[in-house]
Amino acid sequence: AVLGALGVGAIAGASWQVFGRRAGLVGGLIGAFVWPIAHYNISLYSQGSLSILGAFVIAVGMWVIANPSLRGAVLFGVLTGLAVLLRPNSLFFTLALLLAMVITRGSTVVKYGWKRVGGVIAVATLFTVLMIMPQTIANWSVGQNDFVSSNGPENLYNGNNRDSSGMH
Image (tube, rainbow, N blue to C red; front, side, top):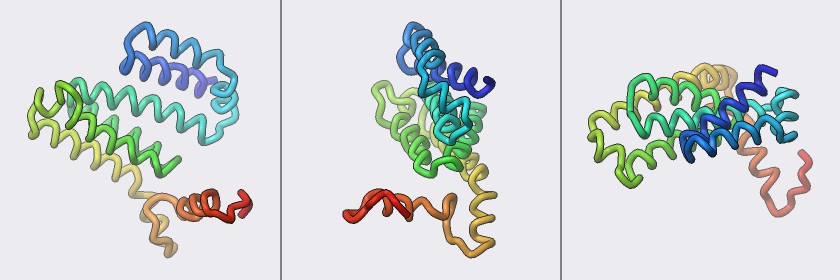
């Protein structure tokens, strides 16, 4: 129930940040009543946790783009790091934030300057790395030279080669 409530709050918050108040309210209502979201949030699959984290990352990322701050950068880095531990391809959230800050209309860089934006990006990256580091050290201590996951590339290959059957 707690994860479900967090998930609805995250979806509503991300929708609100990106599309406005009305969309946030609709997103929250949809999140509360759509059965796949409820199913994944009830059964503790990583998809449910990742959808919650992803929504929070988007909401916080939009907040950081609108108002770059140290607190926002730390929160964004921690949430992104947790998402990367669930799914390594979540690292693209950090890259998306960087691109959005640099290339959006009324760019954050133009508004606040490179010094402030660069500091926010550096802090967000640092905290993302700090969240990933324990898993990286654990992998390297047992001889697996992977940053986060020891089977991600293998799973990618198994699911996407021409002879793929979906079986390991």
